[in-house]
Length: 115
Length: 115
Length: 115
Length: 115
Image 1 (tube, rainbow over the protein chains, first blue to last red):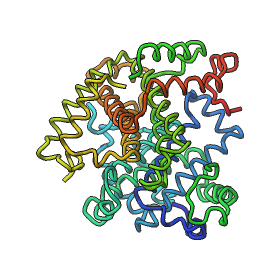
Image 2 (tube, rainbow over the protein chains, first blue to last red; image 1 turned 120 degrees about the vertical axis):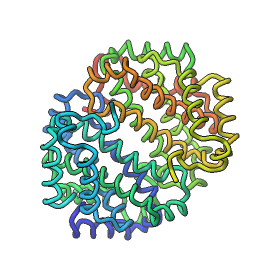
Image 3 (tube, rainbow over the protein chains, first blue to last red; image 1 turned 120 degrees about the horizontal axis):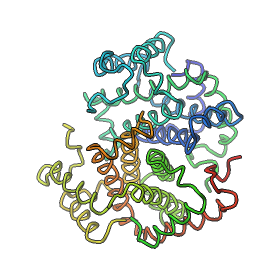
């Protein structure tokens, strides 16, 4: 997720405020979904071109902040649940390789169970 | 986010399927929010105790898979937008330090603008 | 959803601003998900007891506003897609009756495909 | 939301399964957000044209089911919190009239606080 020194700073931020008590896994998952939704909101009603402009304007900072919030929550969650993110990503990618074989999925974004 | 070799594998997975065309920033943000929501769903209707049981049962795998999906989308998004996740997290944490001073926030999860 | 006169007012609100152009079904679905997430945010980090207090405090207005936003988007979506909400709810409830037979589901919130 | 007879059927569905115990406001809000996200998923990776095709294909049923799920959760929430949906929608629309004056908002979907 983030590197060890950033993770350490995040944990210190939380410990100093005595916020571990609020960070139950279910609450963290909710907070993560809320932040992901706030990222979506930055792009809402915008065309692809307008999103492009936004990303090279000062408003890019809003996107970075929301992405950071998602990453912060994900870091806490992985830390608290003892999850090795690289390992779970590789494991999930292997499952996706099976669900989406190249010959069937090339240039085709249909879900594996979609006709 | 994930380490360089995992990121390389993710990019290769995508390239082989010719899926870059679908990964516009706005779509990736939507996909990220959907996966974060699926993580929430694993915990829905469950008490804290039931979540604890789930996390030490075979169903833990579902949690890992959903967290992996979130991390995968976040990795693509950061890659495509040229975002240094450690840097943006540190920057956001600094803003949060100002919004949530320890003396005001100790043991208190209220939002900075909440009375 | 909402009654005919409220729906008429919503459509008039939109027409006056020439916003129909933004209300493509996919965008409306995204906006709906964002508003539902904002409703969640009002309750984030709060215990059941704290939610109870909030709901009988002046902050109740925030909950009402977010619920209204969800209902507004849902109303536009149903209008634009020609959906009879009462009919689709009844149809879905009938499916749920089959997926969740009383004898198996009594006092049990497990998903139908959850062991 | 839904009419009185549909609401009565929904409440009966819930009562028969003894599910009121799970329907705390915060959980209902989470369930609502999850269903709204599932609606988004039906449209994910699809162009506007593909969404149009989907909506006039047999897959339209998936859209109707997800919209029904959103409406069901919203109906329970409004019932349990004693919310008159028509009233709160009108009240919120009045606020939106002030935030988005026609002369400033005509053909422009920018958020009221967006530059």
